Length: 103
Image (tube, rainbow, N blue to C red):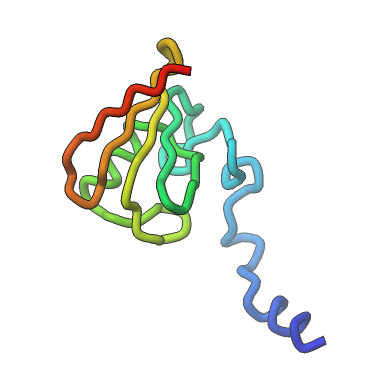
């Protein structure tokens, strides 16, 4: 019972939450620009993946946190549509780390 009261009080009003089709994992819409994702990026360790690579990359030049959960982003993984090449960038040092993991 106490948990029900807490959940109702802490829930954001419906008008302040992102539409479900935007904020879900595996979404096809970037939560930053609201356009279709063409090059998916994943923020790690939180694993939020509803960003387009250019948008999240630009965000991380100004912030070190995930745009969704505000958790610290230590690494950014991204996938280009060329031969399923997955690259990664170490955010904490801002140095590019390239890992070829051809699947």
